[in-house]
Length: 128
Image 1 (tube, rainbow, N blue to C red):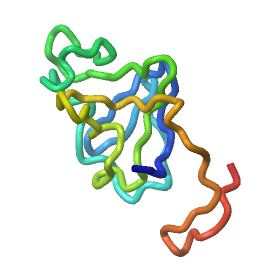
Image 2: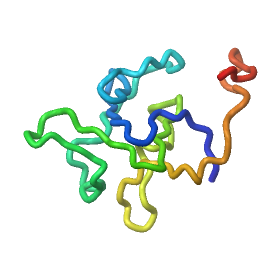
Image 3: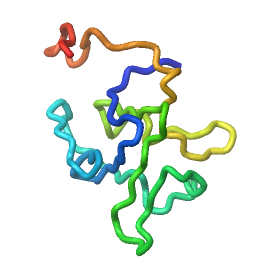
Image 4: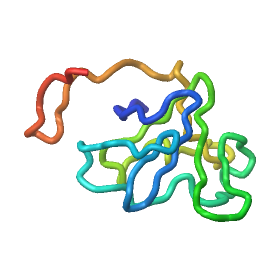
């Protein structure tokens, strides 16, 4: 299935999502003026059993907040602009094992978006 998503992180980036706040890349909050509302979830979730065997998930030893995901080489992380209802990296799972698989292999990227269709008031060519 094909998707159009926004690239949030590149290989080696540390990514964290804080509910009610936003996305953090390498400890800095990402400025996202295109979102209507902040995410309503924390990601990665604290000590998620679906990610327990993946070395790219990092949780603080003391159990406090601060978990993050390190994007593996050859992969990217993508989120939809409708963050709270988007089927994107924060939800993706291996269909056979159910384990979290948020990173998109670069070889699966088909192209770049050229036009904005939604919302209708923003219809037009993308300039970046």
